[in-house]
Image 1 (cartoon, rainbow, N blue to C red):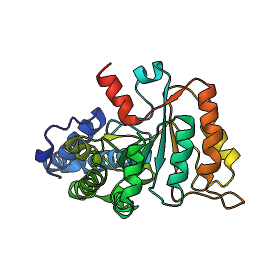
Image 2: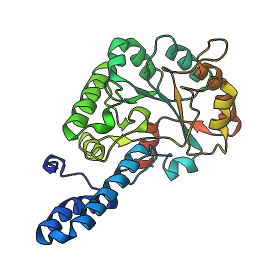
Image 3: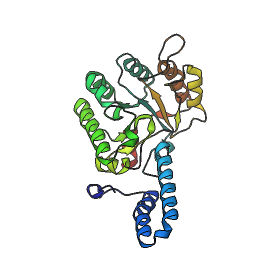
Length: 276
C-alpha cells in the first residue's frame, strides 16, 4: 500500500475512499474467513477495473477534481477557454500567437517543460502577450499512467520548477499527455497546488488533416464555459502542408466572436471565480 502521510491535505473522492476501504478490507476478510477469498478477490478486481477506467477516461472526475468546463460563474459571463497543447514549437507557436493577437483572444498553452527549456524566449513571449503557460509534464512520456506517487511527484515537480524558471510564473493547472492518468495523480496535484484540466470539446487535430472536420467538432453546440483543445505541436497537416491549427484558428475565433463569447485563460477564470 502506498504511503499517503506526506499528502495529508489531500481529500479523496467518494470512489477513492471506497477503493481504499476495499484494499484494506479484502485481505483482512481472507485472513479472518479464508472461504471468502473468491468474493474478496472478485470485489478487489472489480474495484481496480473501475479505477483503471476512471484514469483512462480523460474527462472523468471520479478519482479527483477535473475541469471539463469553466466554472458556472465564468460561463455566466460568456467566457470560453482555448487550450493549446504540446508546445512550444518555433515553427507554429509564433503564428498562433499572432492570430490570437489579431482577434484579441487569450489562450492557455499547456507546455512540455523540456521544450520550454529549449525555447525559453518563445515561452516568455506567450506570457508577455498575456496568455498562460501551464504544466503538460516534463517530458510528455506515454508511460505516465503507470507511475506511482514518487514518479508523478518527480515528473510534475520538475516541470513546475522548469516552467517557473522560464516564465517567472508557477503553473496552476496540469493536463497529462493525452489526458491519461491514474488515481495516484490526484494527491500529487493536491500537494503541488495544481488543478487538473481536461476539455469540453476537442478537434482531434493531431490525427485529422481536414480543418473543416476539426472546426466542426469544436463548433458543435459551442457555448459559454466550453474548454476547447487544440495543438501547436505534434499536429496534423492539411493537404497543402499547413499545420491544422493555423487553418482552424481564424474561423474558430470568428465564430467565437460572433457568438459574443470571450476567450480567457484558465488561470484568469479561476481568479475571477475566487475574487468575484
